[in-house]
Image (cartoon, rainbow, N blue to C red; front, side, top):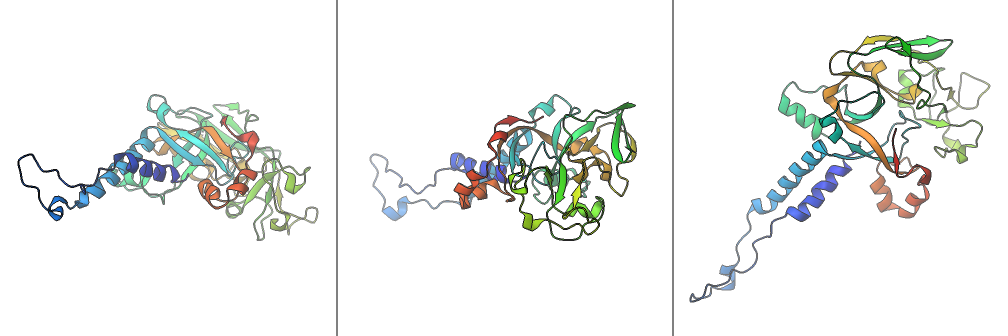
Length: 322
């Protein structure tokens, strides 16, 4: 998730909170001699300029911590629920009185980051340090749940508390196609996560896809197969490193999170249960969606507004996220 919202809050807060500089001439009291113009000017102090920024910074952090912020889908791990280019609202108010539930699409701080044991430094890392990335996944298991993963007939299957989990409502059923240069392995592996996969329908031309418009010039050739000119992954294909096989009993404040695009998601299968203290909020409303590889929607508007509106996916705007 981007830091755009915090910058916007700081800017707006500065406009409203900035104290008036003391440049105005002081009026002479009745009966007293007026002073010269140079004596009427009061030199502003450094605090006159610094205080509004400090206030704005504190307010921005507080609003982001208590209420929520804007975020942008990135990485493709939640396709087709969230796509690259989706701009969403992230709310966190509900988690002040309710705990995260199964099915929630949450935003959380990088679980692999080496956070400090010092509470103050840790707070800074989680809320101010922009080098700590924000991730988005769906909650599959909550504290106390028993989560199991198997490979059956060549496809992945999950069990929740002893019952087969029906994930047909949200799992990605599109094929994946590799659109970054390089030689890909025969099956998805840890190395392929650095490649750019896109969900696509093989029955539709690449430049007319529903989710992304794909440039044929960017396709990665499949050196392992003579049947397909490009590297593709079928939905439900297990990873070659056997990360889809697991048996976990979640403890207090632990959550099992996974991406809806299972063949292209770095999630609890790789780094284990998520600590609840890292959860920021949940994605609940999509404002706008555009088919663009640009990482910042506001830069798209400023640099090329006409092209920005041409790339908007109008059928995905102003929607609740489930």
